Image 1 (cartoon, rainbow, N blue to C red):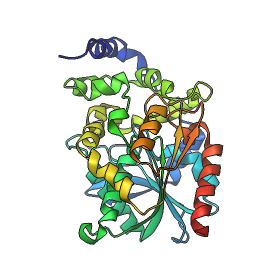
Image 2 (cartoon, rainbow, N blue to C red):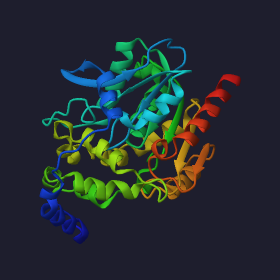
Image 3 (spheres, one colour):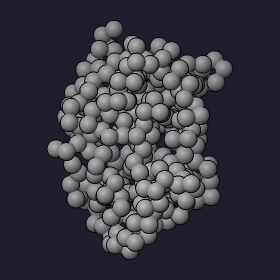
Length: 321
């Protein structure tokens, strides 16, 4: 039997579904982002990505979260690209990449997608900077890398930095609408998802003093709704169930890796904030954590300056060690 709140939310979705259908006007910056991106083929699907090109010796691969896209990285992209080659794609089902309806989405396939792009670009090693959903992708990459003799991974991970990653799945506080998407009625709820509902559920995961502007919300919705991607929410939310099933593999991967790992977390995040950080420190005793007070689930959007500064210091320490 569904939780009463979940049923109520579904009813509200039905009642307001017609109110969130107005067209949005994307910002010039977002249109420029789209225009300057590239595409490559993955299993017959077009995948959108950006690559600053140049030397591969100092490469950062940025992996976005749910339900957004590589557009999230725009601020860090600008600040890091003078010194590093930056690569980031929109994963299958996200952003400006293809969003096939007739498939089961999996973290394994998203990892294979990342490796396919690395092969396309000739990358042999990189630093990983990941957020939210991207954490699961990175954890599986790390698990394979830790056993690369048997997994055949063709890539070296030089470091891993996690932004508000749901490393401990039982500590993840799913939003009510996410619980609905992950329920037996999720496929119905997805069909009625709209801009209004997105705004009502997305803004609260940000800090009180770092709320997204109306234009930021419009831009994110514009990207999410490409190819009616919002109607895939019930399929993309698969990551939560996978994280429960593969908890030990992924947590062990972080515990036992020799790859330098750092977590930068917005502590005001209601999804994966301070309780997640506290449990992470308990289960990974040698964990390195930087907490950002009053910052929510999107620190790289809410406080890009601080995240950039901490990240640059971390990378500099690696070159000196």
